[in-house]
Length: 171
Image (cartoon, rainbow, N blue to C red; front, side):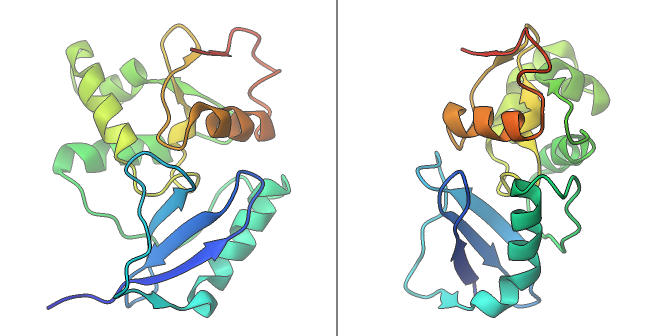
């Protein structure tokens, strides 16, 4: 059985955001324009903007600086390892950062698993809502971001991380 994909596009300070949801209205992805491996609208998808009103309101509040935690019904699928990494990313609070090594430790993986954590982070289908932009290099560098480093810088600036932590710099 094929599940219908619902979609809409929402304007934001970091450009247009493509949101998808399943038949139950659970958010399944949020992509930024030009995102590496980001989703693109397919002919079979249904444009249903009303389904995304709550997500749109929460995103607007986030970008206005009035929302620090999203409370949306989300549904993503990944390996058990990816799900553990994504749960650890979900726990990184607004205005804070963590490193790939710290995420590896939180999920019980060895330091050697940092690359795997990076891969799971890069595969996050819910940019912004699942705050993978808060994961940085151990040396404080703003290493890769599927939505582009400029977007990562803008999100961390919005959250007050850049400027508050002088060691952060794009690599």
